[in-house]
Length: 208
Image 1 (cartoon, one colour):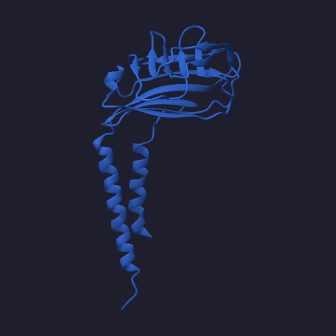
Image 2 (tube, helix red, strand yellow; image 1 turned 60 degrees about the vertical axis):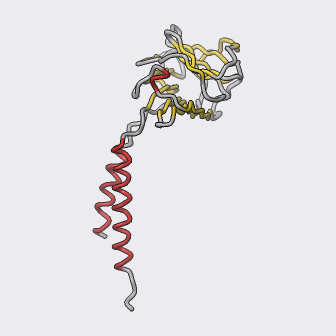
Image 3 (cartoon, rainbow, N blue to C red; image 1 turned 90 degrees about the vertical axis):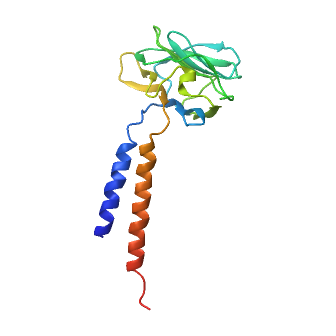
């Protein structure tokens, strides 16, 4: 049994090394992979309480990451979305980046704005609990092409009721190329695992 204790210790270190990812109900991630930038969106809103429907709005029908001085949007050839105001909450931006055509159609419209009141853009006729899931890749791009650097975040949080505790949120984030040390760490874990397993199997061999 003692032979397994070092493996557990290294596994815990790996979990700690890759923990710390931002959490939100809907997360849009710009991840530089070395061969391009992959933009993914995933999550759902458990409730639409705290959001006040304003209008169904027509956007420019283009596969695009759009931003201005106070808002960020994922745009699709769908071209329509529902605009909500948040009753309470906040938005924070470390960077908005720049406008950039997307390498594919995300199929949804999403957005946030830190004007007063806060604005939230959701797919047309979005129903609470509906999963949002898309992924497009801009081959050859870097985060710099979007005017972003690793660690940039911009998001909105709102409450299910005026003055209540914030419960729902949408977050945009930028992630850089994985650190070389991450691959070395997993490589070390794999080597230790197989070495430990080999010693264990050798000890369990039946005598000839």
